[in-house]
Amino acid sequence: MQARRADPTLVRQNHFKKMLQSQRQIGLWTGLRSTMIAEMLSHVSGMDWFVIDMEHSPNDFEDVLLQLQVSQLGGAEPVVRVPWAEPVVVKRVLDLGAQSLIFPLINSPEQAKLAVEATRYPGLGGVRGVVSIGRMNNYGAQSPHYYQEAAAQICNIMQIETMEAVDNIEAIAAVDGVDALFVGPSDLSASMGFIGQPRHPEVRAVIEKAFSRILATGKAAGFLTANKEDDFGSLHQIS
Image (cartoon, rainbow, N blue to C red):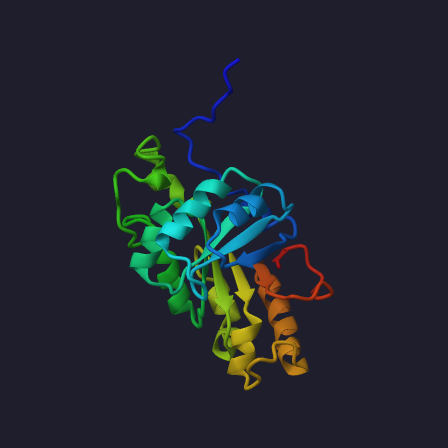
């Protein structure tokens, strides 16, 4: 009996993005450049997502490609944290087939808007460069409809990592195309004068208030923690 294959002309659906609005999503970070770790996390860990980190790890484009290839048929969504909201980097990561991105150090709605525009094509609200055949459109099998459908399946997560960003939470969340705001405790604690102390009481108080403000906008809120007891009591969160 021949195995049934998925229709190659259908754009991959981003279930992680869809589920952000209905239930809590649990995941973790990896910067190990390992396809076996990525495969394990996606297929057997029970996680909802995991981050392929390009900001604070040696992951480069080839590493990202290989980890996407082994993980995108699994149950945990591979989320790529780009090193910066730079359009060429974002374009290349998306062309590799990534559909969920974390943008570090987004401090203003203007920066959030530029990040989103890097994920969208010209004429559809963005500046993303167009390539005819690539992994992102299944090597042309999804052309031309991929270009119209891509944005709906791309999840854009903005990291809130400074007090300036905290002050601008509502404005950042209001930017069209922003799906979630993710608080980064390490950089935030540094911006508050408590470098290396992400669990300082003043930092935790800011995070808790920030979390409530994000959720009040209707967008998903996330945070990074190594402590199981950290829970701000919402289903609409990524952690």
